[in-house]
Length: 390
Ligand code: ADP
Image (cartoon, rainbow, N blue to C red; front, top):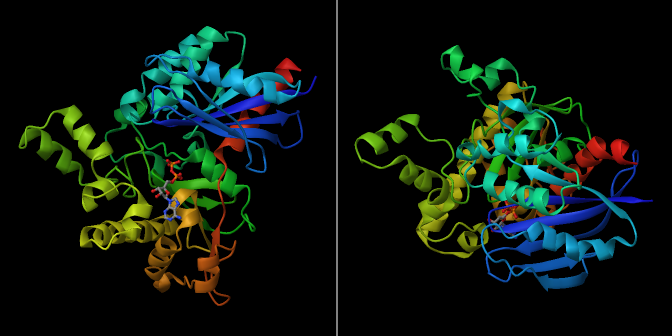
């Protein structure tokens, strides 16, 4: 019987999902995809066909934090599988900790280990693990595979993996991991010239850069937690580590108040005082919105140079995710700050969102490549389970 895999990409307020037909060799083929918005009590589900046409809507009637939304969602998706058997669910899990560096089938022991990492990814880990926890109870026979955002960075060299701290901290798992790995892996497989020195800019609500050489991650801007590196929608990105001590010692802020400040009240939201949403800021004439946008772009440009230094230069710069794929203004702002490194944008191509958006004489090829984390989840999940269950 043909088999299907359901990929979950769970955020704090929504679950993106996609069902694929899989076999052992071919690329997974999309059957349907959708989104469950869990902000309202009657969690709304929208399911679309591969062409983007809505084929089903429904409510999941969430009744409490532990509602089996994923189980209800499977109830909506299974009738759309046309007789294919649901072989597994794959999940994007942000943090693997030191124990996992590849996709893994989750049982209650693994789940406990992953739940213990919540302080290292407080915005993401709970939402990613919630569907696994409820499905372990409601569908105990359904294999569930955790696909980690950290895994693509597993081979970072010691100079980029270690913090400049005494060695015993690395032994405890306190080191640089990196995130957005499913997105970077997808893009790395689609680079027109994989041998080139490439920097990928994943710019969504979360944002990070990855330096790629020969298809592998060499360095990345996020580190122990998804708070490091670039300025983001509500996250500060890198700040002076002394700031954290100062806030606690002199401003008498508790650890959880500092967490709230740096993860939820900073970044575009904090600087602008207006919104965490890039579209809103770009549409605003308020000087603080301009300041937030410029600060966001300046940090990206500066860190692209840092990433390039780890791979000996830069031949290709790729923009992806919500802001990277959709905002000509942000791409123009970032690229204007990189002319000294040989970046020349083609303004028409940038405005029209074509694949290659650099000018013919640009020393660095600039591209837009839309990301697809769900298909990476499906591919990894297939690799773990299909052999075992067919
Ligand atoms: P998430 O990390 O939540 O998956 P996305 O990758 O969907 O985030 O990116 C969300 C961000 O993309 C938001 O800040 C949104 O404003 C921005 N965005 C989406 N479309 C556009 C656009 N046309 N112009 C500018 N920003 C956009």
